[in-house]
Image (tube, rainbow, N blue to C red; front, side, top):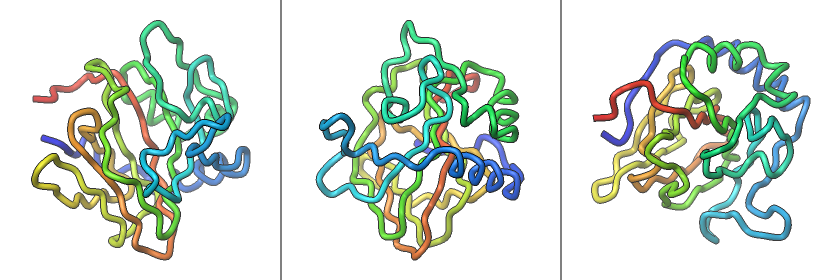
Amino acid sequence: MDCFLLKRGYNTDSLIKDYLIAENNHEFINPEVINEKSFSLSKETHGWEAIPLHTVDGISGNEGTIPIDVNNKIFRPNEILLKCKYFQKILDDLDTEIYLVRLMKLKAGGYVAPHTDKLLNDNVVRCHLPIITNSDVHFYIGNENKIDYDLEAGNLYYINAKNAEHYVENKSNFDRVNLVIDLKPNFDLN
């Protein structure tokens, strides 16, 4: 299965409150170009930004937004996440090892081109917790028969980001914001 619900019913008001705390403490970073290198998924991708929250050694800034191999690395909350108590509670309650965590924004009209996240290894899965979204945000997953998944705000979803091609279109007039969590799975993926 390429996408499934892990947990329902996170408090959206508390999610938005922590999102605003993070945004007020660190501007969103455009990771498409960092240190004069392009990290864009394709030339078609546009309008995505990130705020790193849980990173290697708790670093902030551009380097904290890019997924890396998790082997032999120590991941810690950075100074932004330490101010976001509800996000911290969510991560603690997952009761597993947490790797990279970012707030990911897809601006109104933004597009993330089809891709797989090859940097994820077998011991890392990617989960999405939508904070701000609407029915005009389309999250497609699947290699042959793509399915448009309606990821609802306040619910935590497993996404098969490593093996299944996926892409996102924000056809709305509002930015979409997700909490994206890379973690060690403590659930069966079969």
